[in-house]
Amino acid sequence: MRRFLLYVHTGRDSALTAMLTVLDELRARGVRAVVVDEQVQEIRSADPAIVPDGLLERLASDDVDVDDAVTVADRVELAVVLGGDGTILRCLEVVRDARVPVHGVNLGHVGFLAESEVADLSDTVRRLLDGDYAIEQRSTLDVLVYGADDALVSTQWAINEASLEKNDRQKMINVVLEIDERPVSSFGCDGVLLSTSTGSTAYAFSAGGPVVWPEVDAFLVVPIAAHALFARPLVLGRSSRAAVELAEDSRDGAVLTLDGRREVEIGAGMRVEAALSPVSVSLARLAPTPFANRLVEKFRLPVEGWRGRDPKGT
Image (cartoon, rainbow, N blue to C red; front, side):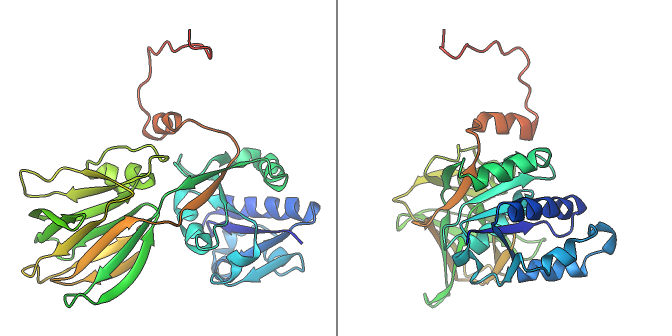
């Protein structure tokens, strides 16, 4: 039997209402819905005012499978996400290793990962069930953390960015930046971002990094508030590897945050290495929306006066 993972923003009433719609569409086509057990618990604990009538009963019915986040991805062919880009990031953490494609239905502000709108939900589900979509691959980062004794401390990954930032708001941290096993610069700063092309429009953009089209197979090194004459953002390719070492005099330490969700404490003398991963994430796209359109809509860019060209380019 076919199985679709349904992943939702459990604190938003519009997402929970849309969840009922998707459950109905899947049942009508004989496809089993799969929900992560943690999400079911969150819905049961949510404010009753935002939980639509009948949802809890449906989640307990025979046509819905409840599974844990560790094994659920091995049992589904596609994930439908009801929420914004943040909810999609959480779902990608669940399905990345199994390379399950994800389709995001936008229920909030315009994002760069979600594509469909809730107003077209029934048609969206129908097209996904019919396989009427294309797969878009997005690069991810592999991130390794080494202790002051060079022992491997933590293995992580990120779809948006790995953010190394100071612990003490009143002080800077001192870092040494290395590219391809060669020292490049050292400086005091608030932190350093290691960002994918996808993450170039997130935290890295706010820190002054360039916007990189998501299909570009590259990653960024973006210093945050660096006290240095040369601390410009760098764009690196797939063959490159970047490392940030926390200097011995940064005794208050720092914190490494992955996609704004997972954290690793970084002490003086520790080292963070990053490179593009061989494992990407897959987005199920219904239409080839130009990335430029998303930029204009997300950032409300002024485009008045554009005359354009006809499709033939004349």
